[in-house]
Length: 65
Image (cartoon, rainbow, N blue to C red):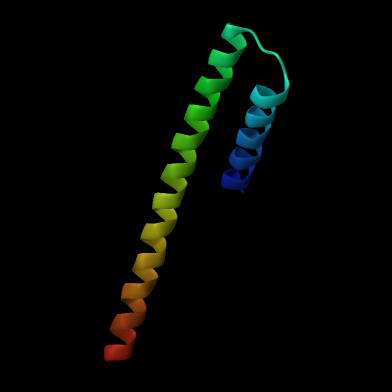
């Protein structure tokens, strides 16, 4: 569920940057927060890929038996 919340927060940041007038400091803070969220999402995607590949390897081994 963390991934979905991060994506939602990223969408909110994008909306703020597109619609609202923000100061330079606010823009930089939003950028920093967005960068952290993107990094977190990338890690979750990589973890999910590893889990899926483990399942694929397990299925291959079962079909060989």
